[in-house]
Amino acid sequence: MSRLAIYPGSFDPPTLGHLDVVARAAHLFDELIVAVGVNSDKAPFLSVEDRLSSLEECVQGMANVRVESFEGLLVDYARRKDCQRIVRGLRAISDFDYEFRVTLANRAMAPEIETVFLITKEEHSFLASSVVREVARLGGRYEGFVPPPVVEKIRKALA
Image (cartoon, rainbow, N blue to C red; front, side, top):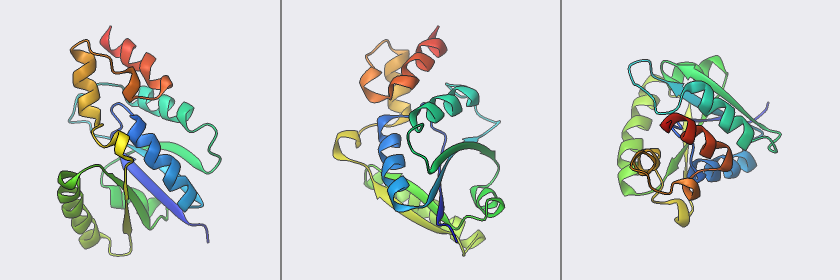
């Protein structure tokens, strides 16, 4: 049986911190799905298509990584994929508090699914998609926070 994991997120936009977690998780599991969550109640900065295509470009060289989108509960998506491992990235203690509560809720709904936490590298510990969006909207230099395929998507979104 293959060890499959899902790394879920909104990835709006994908950051270098996200890619750090993807690369490290890809070494820990046989297969990794980077799963872009779609929330129809929110107005995203980047379209789902832009997030998917930029992430696909970013993981091109990683043979065991694929990018998909999903709607609804993560545990339901994981069950549909016959996946029992979720990867989450942590930057700071505040992330842990939120992720801890989400993990306990997921465990209550799907006790067979385990969550694995990966702490981001120090140089990415301040990076959040919300920070990148704010910097970009206010005309700051965001290019050093995101992978090259995302830079053009952000420029297009700002135009």
